[in-house]
Image 1 (cartoon, rainbow, N blue to C red):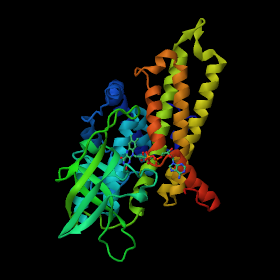
Image 2: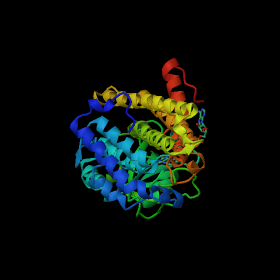
Image 3: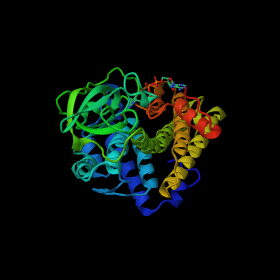
Image 4: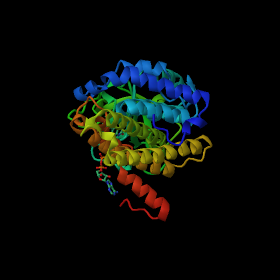
Length: 390
Ligand SMILES: Cc1cc2nc3c(=O)[nH]c(=O)nc-3n(C[C@H](O)[C@H](O)[C@H](O)COP(=O)(O)OP(=O)(O)OC[C@H]3O[C@@H](n4cnc5c(N)ncnc54)[C@H](O)[C@@H]3O)c2cc1C
C-alpha cells in the first residue's frame, strides 16, 4: 500500500493493529460484494453489528464501552474503511462522530448509559438530522422547531439527505426551541428521537448516482412528542451540531485518503498487467506521469491527515484546520479517482474495478459535511478576518 514517506514507521502497536484489522475486514468482507451493493443501491446491513464487535464506532471516545484509542488510530480506521467504500466510512462516521459523540459530549448520564453501549456495539443504528430541504449550507436557517408540551416537547419539521435515516433506531434531531426563555431567539437544541415514535417518518431517497452503497433518507416530524429526558442537556446553539461536524470532517479528511489510495493501487496494478503495443502500459511515460502525480498528491494528503491527528491529540485542533484538510483531501480523491479510472480504459467504467465507484462517491463527499465552497469560505474568513458567506 502506498506509504511513500514511511509514515508507518511512527505508528505504535495498537495503531497498526487497528489499521490491519480494518484492512483485513475490508478485504474479506467488503471488497467481494461492494460493487454489487453499489449497483443495487444497498448497504451491507449484515456488517453493522460486526463493525460494532470490531470496535469501528467511535473508538476514540472514552468510557461507556469505547476504548479511547489515539486519534491516529481512529483516522487510520476511517482510511481503511473508505478504501473499501465511502458508504462504509459514512456508516462509521455517522454512528460514531455524529451520534455517539454528541451523546458523549452533551448527553445526560442516563442518555449515555442507555445509548452509547448499544450504538458502539452496532445493536442500534443512529442518524444525524441537521440538513433540511430549504437549508443545506446554512443550517442555522433551520425551520424544524420544538415547543414545550407538559413534561416534554413536541417537534415539527423535516430533515433531508440523512444518512441511515431509513434504518435508524435513533435520530439526533437539531431543532429550534421556541419555548426557551431568556436565551436569545429560539436556540438550536439536540433531541434524541426514537424513530418508532408516533409522527416520525423516514423515507428512503432513491435515484442517487453517488454513494449508492449507503442508505439515505428524509425524516418527517409531525407533532412528535419527546420527553424532557430526550433533550441533550449540555449544549445550546449551533455549537452543538457544528462541533459534531468537526469530528466527522476529521474522519473524512482521513477517509478520502483511503479512497484515493485504493484508486492508486488499482491503477498501478492495472498498469503493470495490461499490455498494449507489446508490453505493459506502465512502461509508457504518459502512464508513469499519472502514477507519479497521483502518488505525490496522495502523500501530501496523508501528511495533512497525520498532522491533524497530532493537533487533535494535544487539543490544538481548530475547525479551520479540519476545513483545510477536508477540502484538500476530498478534492485530491475526487481528481485522482478520475485519473485512475482513465488509466483503466474501458474496464474502468465497470463495477469490477473501484475507481469509478470511488469517483462517483466523491461527488457526495465533496458536497456533504460542508461543501468544498463552504470550506473555501471558512478558510477565506480565517485568512482575512472578512466573511464572504452573504
Ligand atoms: C448522500 C448524502 C448524505 C448526506 N448525509 C447527511 C446526514 O447524515 N445528515 C445531514 O444533516 N445532512 C446530510 N447530507 C446533506 C449535506 O450536508 C448537504 O447536501 C450539504 O450541506 C449541502 O447542502 P445542499 O445540498 O442544500 O446544497 P446548497 O446549500 O443548496 O448548495 C448548493 C450550491 O451552492 C453553493 N453555496 C451555498 N452557499 C454558498 C455561499 N455562501 N457562497 C458560495 N456558494 C455557496 C454550494 O457550495 C453548492 O455548490 C448528506 C448529503 C448527501 C448528498
